[in-house]
Image 1 (cartoon, rainbow over the protein chains, first blue to last red):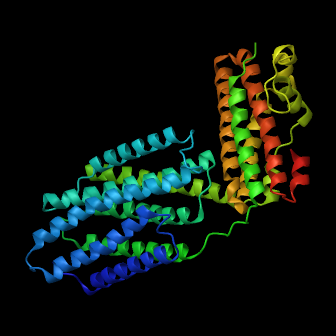
Image 2 (image 1 turned 135 degrees about the vertical axis):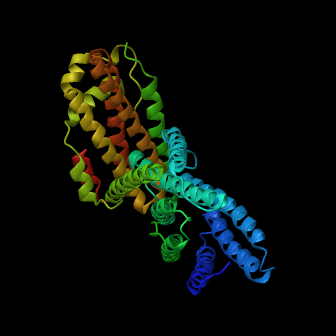
Image 3 (image 1 turned 90 degrees about the vertical axis):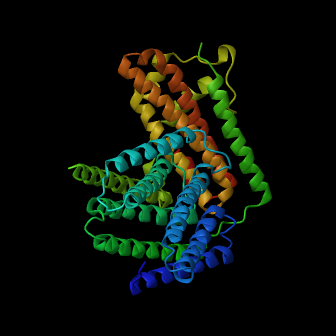
Length: 263
Length: 184
């Protein structure tokens, strides 16, 4: 497999970006707040090293090993992205530590419908490619980006509908993922339309564009996760107790009003 | 041909995603950047005395339901008139959203206020649910039978929400308390 100078530049730049982001996550103590996101970024950095070693240092003809490694890691990548989505969703929809009662069902519906829509759209794609595995690759890339974009946009819409605010860093991570996923839908649509039967020139050009967008997202995460969220005011203990008492009273009101009957 | 269908569907899909993103992003941003004055401006005037009369017909000032002959003296037609029908209830529904945002406003400085804001949000959803039921009843011609029960619950919930938002501002010693007392 031949890599151009530009390919190698993006590979190195993305790796450096992941390492810088990990440094930010650990030094600014965000890793504990976003363990799944930190795991995903660590995985990306480790994946770059593993694929580089496979491509350059192991038997140059072992393309098959590289291929299997790439695909196994793509599956892990997809699973981790879903876990990161769940991690962010929990932070938005579980403001007091448990799922907001009115959100859970809507969230499950949104997830289910997103998966169905992504599956139907993917089934419509019929990219032309010389090898079956390339067809599978083009379609699965489209499916992944369609699903992730729906989930992130759906999460944003649902939180706005029910009126749940986003904390600063949760919003920034989700925005990065959401923008990247939506751009990917556009690019993978083009990939599936043009296919690989006439060569990979279009695919390579779109892939370059995709990697540039991802590098931009990485930069956005590095900057925004480095910045601190607005500092809260210190709450006196007595006031804290009053607020918790008030919360219980508001909750109790609702229970009482639900229980009365007009004769 | 099939590829063309795919591109068309993907185009609609992308347009839908983009439109949804922009719409809800702007809505969230507007809500999170709203100033105190913006929030107060969004409150629609309601006759507090009439709201209190309907609410206190069913509950005491403490929130306890009234029992026996003390409670539920108002006739359904009186509740309808005092409230201004379904339109009056829709005004309360909109004001509820502002009440939740007023609680979230405190949360910007005191994150601990989140628990109250979240509980008020659930109360507001309950009112939305009552109004939704009444709108459904209006469409099926059963509004008269259902109105008093659902409307009085919604008004009582709203009334208590206003008390609790004021209490939250009082506890947080927010200087805007006096202005808020005048507004709600």
